[in-house]
Structure formats: C-alpha cells, structure tokens
Length: 176
Image (cartoon, rainbow, N blue to C red):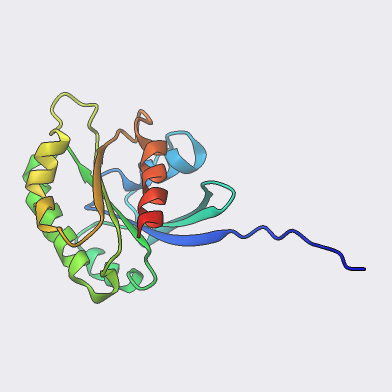
C-alpha cells in the first residue's frame, strides 16, 4: 500500500527593477512588498524582496541603484533575469532621453534576449506628468518589435497601479 503526497510546485522567477535615480523604484518596491510608503534614501547597491504572487508563482525582485555611478553595475545583474521592470519618472521630461538610452543599453545585452519588459511611468498622478503615449514615444518603444513589452502608468506614492503592474509582470512571464 502506498501513500500519495501532494507537492506544492512554486516557480521563483527573477525580476530586475531598473531605472534612473529618483524615478521611484525603491518606493515602488516597498509599496508593493509592505503596502506602505517608506522613507527611502538613494539606493547604493541593491534591495531584494521575494513576493508570492499566487500559489504557483513567486517573484524575487532586485531593485538596483540608478545613479550614474551605479548604472555600469547593472550588467552584473542581467544574467538570470526573467523579466525587466523599467521605471521612469513621468514628470522628468529633461531626463527622458537619458532613460531611453539606459533602457536601450540594458536591452542590447545578450542576457536580455527575449526577456519581457514592463515600463512603469511613475508619478503619473501628478498634473505635470507625461501620458503613457508620450512616455512610449520618448523611449522609442515601437523599436522593440521583437520583444514582449507593456507600458503602464502608476504612482508608487499613492499606490495606484502597483499591484496591477506585478500582475502584468506575471502575465508577461507566462507569455514568454
């Protein structure tokens, strides 16, 4: 006589959270993880949290510092990345070109081939924020025809679109 055991199969997937400094990555991460806004300092190095999305999917989210001096270190975190969440400050028109160049550089890395992309236009609740269409145009998102990607508006401070964003990441991972 045998005994049948039920095993819970949980897939843990690595997600990188990148973007220029002050785009709101860490605020977004802790809003998602703890449900509250926390005081943050510029990230020197990285923050990492594990989030259970559903009974079968767990995401390990790596929030890597976005200061100019930290961006060269992004390449060391790309291997094993299964989804990229790139956060932009939708109110920072002056740095949108820099954000686009940083995104393009990351996506050209051989480890990023076929990695799905979610762009978050953070601070979209502010009256001076660009629309999702404007951000998409500024980042030249149409040039990524061979990649699964999505762009969404959010506000890490107000919690708008935070949960939806990571549900979208889970769906992008499933499509891939």
